[in-house]
Structures are given as C-alpha cells and as structure tokens.
Image (cartoon, rainbow, N blue to C red; front, side):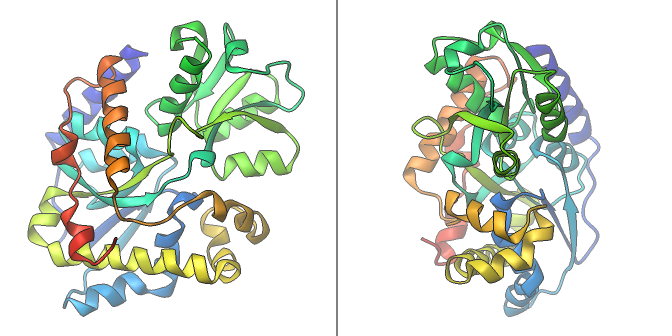
Length: 321
C-alpha cells in the first residue's frame, strides 16, 4: 500500500514542478458527479456563480471539469490545470503533502452515512472482524479508504489483515456483484443505487467514526490575487445549499443528471448530508485526525500543518457561519 502512495506522490511532485497558470480571465473548477457537491451543481444551473462574481466586478470564463474521484483531481491541480476543487479530506491532504499549493477554503458537505463498507446482501460477513482474509476494494487515497481502516480497527484488524484491491467505484460495483470481491468501501450515490436494487447491505458506515467530510480547496495563487472571487464562489455555493433545503424536489429534478441519480433516489440521498460550507472546530479536529492517520501509516511523505492548510477567513468574511 505504501508503494502505491509513494508512486502517487512521486507523480504529483513531478507534476507540481511543471504547473502552468490559468488563462487570463479564467476560473477553473474541478468537481465530481456525486451528490456530495449538490449545491455547486445547483449554483451552476442557476448561474449563481456568475451572478455572485458579477457583484464583485468579475466576469471570468468558468471552465468546469469533472473527475471520477479525488486522486485524479490532485493530479490535475498538480499539473496547474485547476483553481478550485471539490474533493474528500484525504486526497486534499495527500495533494498538500505532495507540494500542491492549495488551501481548504470551506466544506462541501459532511455525511457519515454517505460513505460505507458494503457487502453483498446474502454475504455471510456480519461484522468488521469477518473481513479478515477477505478481498476488499476501495479507491486508494479516497476518504472511503480512511473509513475502511477505521472500520477494520473497530473490529480489531488492520489493513494487513485483508486483501486490499485498488478499484474505481464503478469497477468495485462490478466486482462486488459478480462475486470477485467480498466487500467494498464506497460512497454516495453508489450506496443508494445498490441498496435500492437490493444488491448490498451496509456492514458499517461513518457513524461515530468518520464524519464523511469533503472540502473545497483553492490554489494559494487564486486566493491571494482574486480573494473576492473566491468569496463570491462560496456565496454561490451557500445559495445552492439553501435551495436544496427549501426546495428539495426542484433541486433533485434540476441536478439529477449531474450526479447520475433519478430525482426520486436523490431525494432519499439529500438527508444524508449537511451542506453548510462553514468550517467548525470539530471539522478541523476531523481533518487533523485524517492527517495523523496518513502520516503514522506512512501514506504521506511530509506532515501537513492543518492549522495553516485550513483557511477560516474566507467563509467568515463571506458571512457564512
């Protein structure tokens, strides 16, 4: 496992050395097609990002990019191709440790029930202890990877007690349904999709052990040179979050295609999240625990000072509490 992370960090380090700036008047935003980032999709459809930017006299051309998970977003940042990104706390820390000049400017969502270790519905696996010697898939470097380690610890096991397989969520689903693996650590919307099909059951989720915290990162260059634009983006995100709370059905209809769910399933998923972008004290504690886990396990080359990595000033200046 350490070898895989060393390779990843090596790739990121090389890419950081060859980064390039954004084109003048351009704002590049990296997302993932999952409901954890629902407010930004609402803001995108409603043109609220452009509206909030216009309020501060900015009219950049917005370039949207979509990725399957956090690790490839890191690679894109390392190559100098992004300004703002939406990803889990785990990949965000990996990127920072590898030398990517980013900071956490807000949260996208928290949701302990939105990431889980699942097994086939008829599996004989009943507890984390039963995972010993089993084949378990996860996207290495994702926040579900950290959850898997925590679930194993709760069952008295370590990552060395299982056969860990690095697979995308799509491949994990295929492997799980075909019986080629015994369990998978995944996140929404895949959990709800598989549960609705009666294909899996949740062995353990983040309840009580991991908040399922995802973050918004921005490059130091963007924050230093275009601070008002960053705050405008946060305000647009908050508007999206409020819209979901007050108009859930309309929100589900509006962004269903963006997150690959039907509006009906998306309505079931929304309650699993708190979309408030404000960073609280316990959120910082959670990020510190994630960093400590990765450092102690040798999964990052250098420590990350979370106090410096997390920038509370932008949400506060934006009136987001």
